[in-house]
Image (cartoon, rainbow, N blue to C red):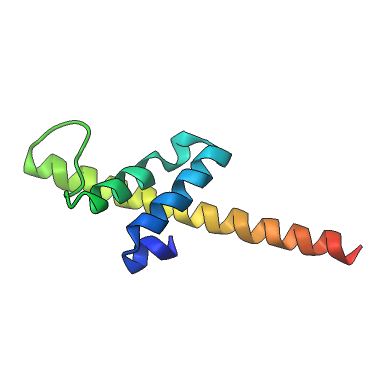
Length: 90
């Protein structure tokens, strides 16, 4: 998420692909698509319709999904680190 926010879409794509391989492609599909579109210099493309209103709502939905996925990824990473430290303390 940090790479995406900084505009480092190549690194963001790499990390999203790794996360997708580990946690499931369906969870990171939108993230990967957004990174690829940024790298290709294309605006986000909606899956359904080509109308302006549909483009805006689909882009907004993709952005919201990206944000939610990033929050989940951060949560799971933090939790994994906490568990790792707990194991080390034993």
